Length: 212
Image (cartoon, rainbow, N blue to C red):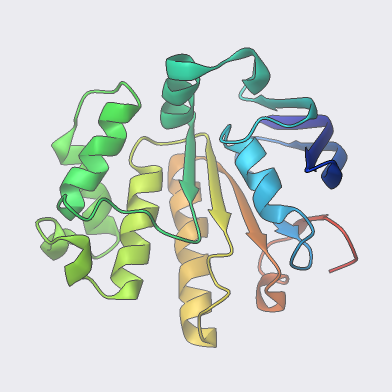
């Protein structure tokens, strides 16, 4: 599903990321582990096509992200990659369901309200469809961010430190939510984390920096 080949990224002349190779098959679930500063967020952004590495290549669903740019890259990302960032970046001026419809529009897909409602219902958010993000609890907003990430049935689902600020019960709930939504889409799941609590829940580990 994806393959990283000799990926390196430099910042201000310093190497902040190096991955000689990493492959994941469609539907696999992975943890990207490592201490703070090891490059997890940087690599997640490379996988999402948000960041172009200084060297090497990221092949996603058979496409080299380096060969795409502008609107073509945006549409490919929207159609194939879902991402839940540490900062949820919900559009505050839009309702919950319109945040999902915007994701469809940005991907160049038809705005399918029934699909958006289906995803919200599956995350126990059907009654929040018309709410604005500021009217949600943090947990509800996080579930909306997951809904937005999966509404286009991505091939690759990425999550950046989704459990780091949560208690044990909420940590387990969020991890189960991401795993279930990835399985429902048949998506490859990659969770970047330094949270030791999740290591036993997902068998495939890719470690950056010092051993995690």
